[in-house]
Image (cartoon, rainbow, N blue to C red; front, top):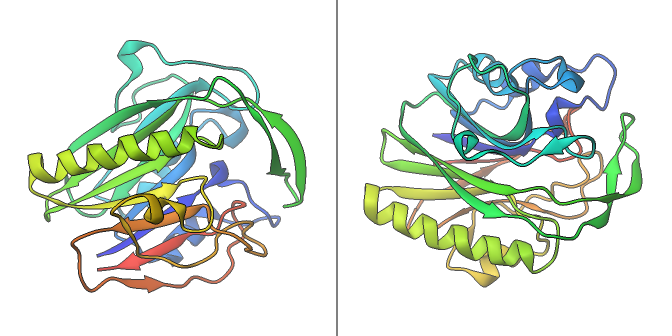
Length: 258
């Protein structure tokens, strides 16, 4: 089973004419967990990106966990209580932003965990359409973790933690405890992955989770640091798969094979 984590930056191309469909297919993954995914947002063509990713890899199923309604950095609102769900089809006509998992392996259960948000924002280096960085003050949005309980005895937990120091560590600890509960409740081996917004291997240093990937992932055109990790525990025979530079997103995809 090949598993990929990628901060997708809503599929923003760094080169004219770059095809996200071709890039996704080239990864050869059975399960792809994506952060920064759009659901019917105009900036990405008003499509359902999770469904498009699923189609690109011929997935058996896909799930999308909205974190906000609207576009981050522009106009958005917090979700209502009935929106705290995992969407698994394209019937909903709302506009969201969040996380997604597409899987060739059937999913028994979809779950989500609310992680809250920081009350303050921070200046961040954001990539523009040409891939260059510019400094902007960004308000933090609500964060969530989503889990796909697979039929093969594994669970994939996808997250995108806050960029605000200490807040992201609090969220990491909350997710780690949740994963331990999933292991016992469903009898699965958990793969924890995503954009942790924590450099220098901090997630594995603060928890019992071990790094399964060492690749630097940011910025994608010349990686100098890793905010993106795939973590595991009690799982043997994990191989990290290296990918060439991709023309999509300011983050580089990371992959393992079990």
